[in-house]
Length: 320
Length: 320
Image 1 (cartoon, rainbow over the protein chains, first blue to last red):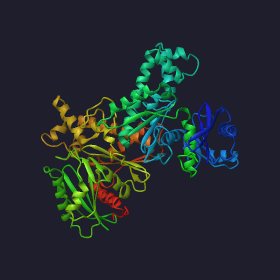
Image 2: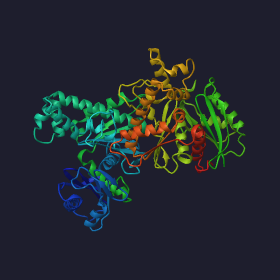
Image 3: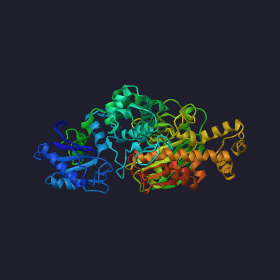
Image 4: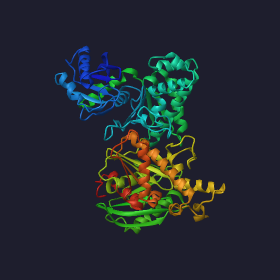
C-alpha cells in the first residue's frame, strides 16, 4: 500500500513514492512564486502525475513549512512562500484535485524528524531531538515514540530559543535566537553586514550578487577565511547551548542533526556540535550521542509519506 | 480508597491522608540527619502511624528528591540527604515496614507538578510546565496529560539549563545554570560572597550565623536592600529566559510557579517572571499564562498520594 510523500520547500517541491520503506520513484518541480496556495496545489497535482498518478496509491502525505495543523489539514501560515499568510485548507484542496485521494499534511521539520525515527539515524530511539540546520533552524521531537506537536502545533521551534539575551537580531525580529547564529539566511546577512563595514571575506567574494549557499560556506571554510571560521564557530556554540538545554529538560539520549547547511558541512561539523553540547552539560550525561541525519535531502518527502500513512491509519514502517 | 502521600524534604518529612481529593489528616516529622535511607524508612513508617496507621489505606505514595525510578521504586541518588549516594530500593523497604502495603515513589518535583495538574493551578491543562523555586530550582512537565519522566527519569531539570554561558557557578559545579541565579542556596552563597568582599547587605545582617531563609529575602526586599533587589532582579531575568526557551520548544500555554522562595515572594514575583518570559518570547504567544501554584507547602505530599494512586492503578482525581 504505497504512499506518495511530498516536501514543499521554498524553491522546490520534491516527491517520492514510498512502499515498504523503499523509494520506488522520485521527482521534483519548482515551487511556484506566484498564485499562492492554489498554485502550489496545482503544481503538486502535476507532480503526482509525474510520479505515475494515483493508481494504486493509498494516499499523499505533505510536509509544509510554517504552522501546520495536521488534524485539520490546514497550513495556517507559510512565511517563506509568497502569498500564503492566511490559513488554507491544504489537505482538502489537494485531495479534491486528486479525485478524493486521502491527503495528510504536517510541518516539514516534524516529518523530517519522523523519517529519521523510522528509517534513519533515529531508528530504535523512542526519545530524540531532530535539528535541521538550513536556511533557518528547525527542531522536531520524538517523545515516547510519538511526534510532539503541541496544543497549537508550534512545538519544536528550537531556532527561536534564546541563546544570548539581547544578542544578534533574528530574521523573525527577536534577539539572540539560535537561528540568528546558525541559520544560513542569517549567516549570509551577517557576512554581508560585516563586509559592508569593511571586513573583507571570501564569503562575499564567492557570492557577490547571488545567494550565499551552503556550498559557499564550505569553500570559504576550506580556504581558511577568518570570517567564515568565526561565523561557523559561533553557530556551533549556539547549537551546543540550545541543544544542551533541550537535552537537560527532556532527558534525551540522542540528537540527530540534518538540514542543507549541516549536510554540506558534513560529519565533522556534527562532531563539533556534539562537543559543544557535552561542554554545556553539567552534570554530564553518559551515553549522549549527537549524530548526522541519515536520509539527506529526501528525508522530508520520505517522512511526509510515513507521517501521512500514520495519520491515515496505516502502519508507519512500510509507508503503507 | 484513601492514599497516604509523603513528601521527603531535606529538613522535614510531611504526610497527608488524601481521599477524593480532600486532605483528611496531615502531620510532619524531622528528616533524620543520620542513618541514611533506612532511618528515613523508619521515620516514614512512624509518620504513617501518626496519621492513623494503614487500616483502610490503599497505598502510600512518596515524593523524594534526586533521581527516582518510579517503575522500579528506587531512589538512585538523593544528594541533599546525608548518606544517600547509592541507589536504594525505597518502595520495597517501606512496603515491608508497612506490612506489605503498596508503596510508590516518584521525584518530588514531578509529584508537585502532578498535584497542581489534578487539584491546583494546572487543572484542565493537558500541557504545562511546573517550576519550583526553593533551595534549588526544579521543573516538572505535563505533556498531553501525562508526566514527562524521560528514559533515565531525569526530565524536568530546568534548574540546570544554561541561561548565561560561562556565567555564575551553580551548586552542581556547572556554570550559568538557572539555579545559580534563582535557587535560594545559591542566592545565599552569592550574598555572603559579595558581603565578604565588602558590599554591605541587610541579607547578611538578618541572617548573620543562620540559614538565609526565603523570609530573609522578603524582609530585605521590603527594606529596599540594593543587593536583595539586584539578586532577585537577576533571578527573575534568569527564570524568564529558561522558561521562555521551554515554552518555545514544547508549545506550552501555561506555566505554574511554586516552591518555598516563590511562595514567600508572592504573586507579584510570579507576575514579574511572567513579564520576563513574555519579553523573551518572539514571536509572541497569545494567551500564555504564568501563574502561582495553588497548593503551597502541601502540594508535594498531595501529589505523592495522587501519583501513588495512578502508579498503583487507581483513578487519579480522587486519590484512591
